[in-house]
Length: 241
Ligand SMILES: CC(C)(COP(=O)(O)OP(=O)(O)OC[C@H]1O[C@@H](n2cnc3c(N)ncnc32)[C@H](O)[C@@H]1OP(=O)(O)O)[C@@H](O)C(=O)NCCC(=O)NCCS
Image (tube, rainbow, N blue to C red; front, side):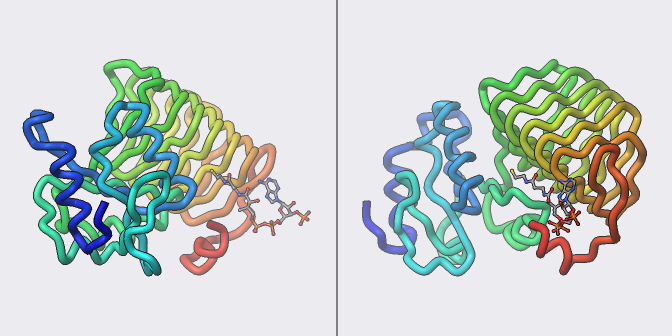
């Protein structure tokens, strides 16, 4: 595969011609770290590996170098190539992905959403644009997952649950019925949330916590039961994630 700027995309288009699918799509995964590789795995498990044209990252030192067989380019590539039929997916596991998503809106044909084939869900579950639903999740009834939110591995999400936009649910989280979680929240690994609880926007729930009361916006909460520890601002968010 040529490493010349943009030429790999032409190569990907040749390998995956538009006649191959009703909606011809080539995907760039934003982020080539651990979660980026996991999102590539979802495309592989869906039988869509050929659709992935590569990864995009900020400040790429060696454009074209592969990660798990796909070339990595600087995100500014989107300003210099023909993005017809190109869609993006943001595999940054923290709510700070919002900045990258907002900066890239309009530079491609929108955002893809992926749902791992192992996911169990009813027909009363809606996933927004740009959502990433990893392997082993179970969603029951009347559940909305907001745009650009991520539900990582092996969570259970009960009835009448609303997740906001840009929110991250880490592996092994159990969310009971009638729970509402706001925008740009981070729920750590193994958290349990009892029924009818509301978590405000931009709040962070530490790993292993048990949430039994409402948590206001912009709060770090921890423990069993989870208690607010302190207010969070952007600088503190950057330190924690
Ligand atoms: C809460 C968290 C963000 C750390 O916050 P922090 O402000 O840097 O906290 P510190 O590490 O300085 O620890 C402060 C105190 O909180 C305790 N603490 C840290 N995380 C805790 C948690 N999840 N639950 C209970 N107590 C916790 C520490 O033991 C420490 O206690 P001490 O003062 O008695 O020694 C981090 O521990 C955490 O839970 N991150 C979630 C990571 C995760 O789930 N990632 C998913 C990847 S897919």
